Image (cartoon, rainbow, N blue to C red; front, side, top):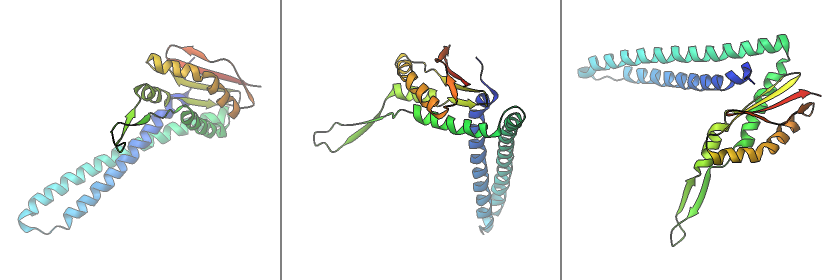
Length: 205
């Protein structure tokens, strides 16, 4: 089974938007620095100030261009997906897919933190992170749900470690119940593992 276009691009679009917004913020901060240096009135440093302003202006332009390219790429991928939905599916299913992808990731998330008191006076609390749960979370946060008018395809990446894999196997029935409850008009078959990928597929009743 192969990923759909939505499943291939969902994480990519998220990263593009994140780095695009970050670049815009950095560009804005650089613009403020240029103005700040422009307000400095130190005669014996005037040449250095002008040089710094030129470098900051150049860097600002680069970051602004990068931000624009990233955002336009993300928007283009979304437009392609929406166009495909309009032609062969339903545009509302795109937004349902995004929402259920977010909800599935929240459902799969495991709390990595554990607190333990180790001092004699019981005053100092040390927070520890469970490496098994961390590996599980890093892997399953790539999960996606693609809803179409005649099918639902759920992709979950399998963790690498044996302990994290066991945790996912123990959750399979709960995952199926969770996604089936959100899509009552679809019939879900048993999960199917292919390599490091776990698939849930459903067809409309």
